[in-house]
Image (cartoon, rainbow, N blue to C red; front, side, top):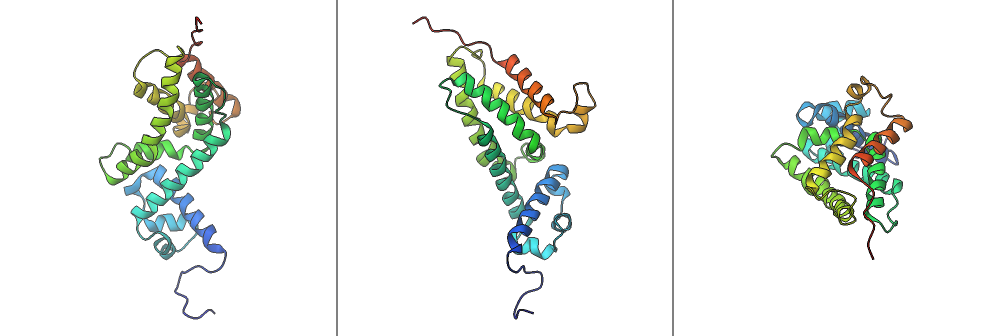
Length: 215
């Protein structure tokens, strides 16, 4: 037995695995029950770890929430970037590719939309964190594509904020509300065919053929 080792403190290479397990369990539980509906003990139990480890790695539940959301954003963004191709020379085509990639990432990480629903509407530190680190930057990125598509004549000149929510909420919530969505006709929303059909429908509803230049 190693001298001076505190109870519950990890050794060796297991620490990164335990931290990842705690983060994944946090994401799942915060998405399902919201911040107030989850305790550190429940998170630790879901991760197969001791509660003391959650405190050892993250300190408080608030700090664990921030760490979990930060990792979720990183994982979501990685999937979004890997699925996207941004060198078409056309903002309209880039927007189409972005919508497809966003829907694919949303299907893999439905927790994102669920957590936004739980905490995005609150005037709280968590709501502010989501605004500063997720929704705000994401809006600026998507707004650039939307404004570019408008300039190309592919989208009507209406509120970019409205279009942003049409894409993000309309694109992601069928996966976040999996059971409800699948209770309606259209097949399993998580299937490759259903996701493609969902993306095609949003693109067809929002984007028309760009107006050709007269030059």
